[in-house]
Image (cartoon, rainbow, N blue to C red; front, side, top):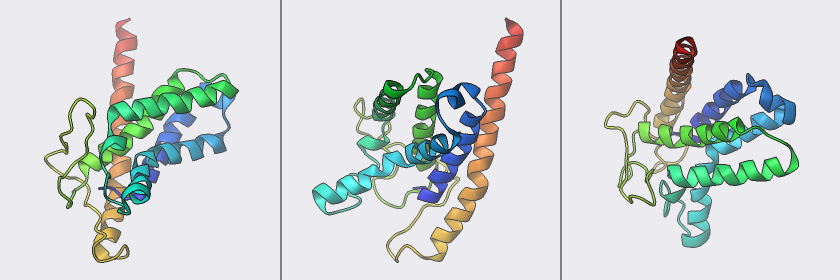
Length: 185
């Protein structure tokens, strides 16, 4: 699984993508947008707390329902609706929120998972199977020897290189597709 630092980095990069959209800034301050990006990018890991509250085990329900695309979309609709109640926020904000939530699921699927079953239940409630990419491009965290260990440090360094590269690749790909669609019209 990816680290909270890696997920927060994805949130920061998502903030910069959303920050360029002036529609967001009309209704939402940059500081609040930044904090929202970090929180939403880490939100699926709320299952650590839920696992501890209900089972006294942090990993009891980790990578299950909170790591589902469907649950992520429902959570983002709830957050969007609550924010829209106070201020008029464009629908593109909902897409941005879901993109941040999705980034968490994607990073966990790309990270090496040493705990079985490996992967995340990203298609829950349609399927309770765990899914992961066949090739891990991010080293996984290990908590068996404590949090502070060389493997975790190297994983975080790897995330600091890989995650920005992924975001820039996605950004340029979507920008190219958007420009091609615009030129065809």
